[in-house]
Image 1 (cartoon, rainbow, N blue to C red):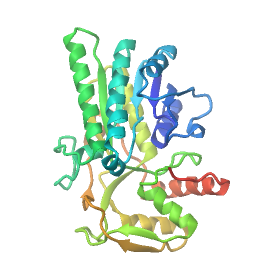
Image 2: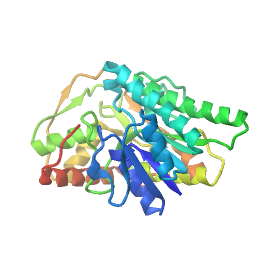
Image 3: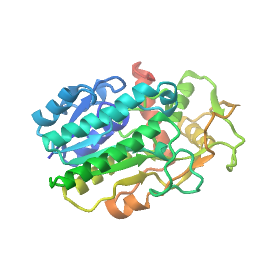
Image 4: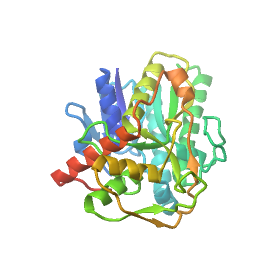
Length: 334
């Protein structure tokens, strides 16, 4: 069975490709390389350079490689950017998903794992977010991810009403994905905490904590961080469940159920690099909730998936990958 991984040249997508390979599952990458990097695609994995908004390219990739399932990671990320530039976000994340699903139906591809996000919840008013927590996205990015979940639901319902074979799908809602599974792949986002912090440490520059007066134990924001390798193995578990026609929920939250603050991360980085990490405190970022932590009980019970990496593993693996790239002169954000 061969799976198409959209966005498979990106940070998360390339880890998914590697997780599939480690389980003996063949994959093909579709990526327009707008943010993905060719060197992140493992040797021997076919790379189709194209956009999910290009119906002809998507259809050709599905048919020419005899694809039986799709992991849809390709998207324009970054909630803040989507607020400033909503139309590109909707074009890629909504129209691109619509085109992909249209081409899947036309090509007879009946299994889709969708990369969703904790952004569908917005700022929840509960201590522990579950799959059933109210959805209240606060950015075009979060809204686009929620619409993607609706598109999957509606396509599956339409296929059922038409008497066609089941269109099977699930959405994996990532919380804060960090770390590196292999030293040659690292988070390149200029908007994410880990790469920004590690870049400042490498350059010997001051890091800024965005507010330390939240109602949390140390005053800094608390999030649910999960290692990218754990996220990747969740895609394997979901793909296997879909391919075997097992019962599967429409969505699963992926996290560790453990709240980690920004200052906790700084302390862990200090331990990993063996020296103090200087930081100052700036103003709060508008809309930043004090705490977002999820429960992954459903994924554990139904997919048999567990997060296995702790904070030290997240930080040490991210630092190893970042410093290797910095030493090679290839470390860059964006």
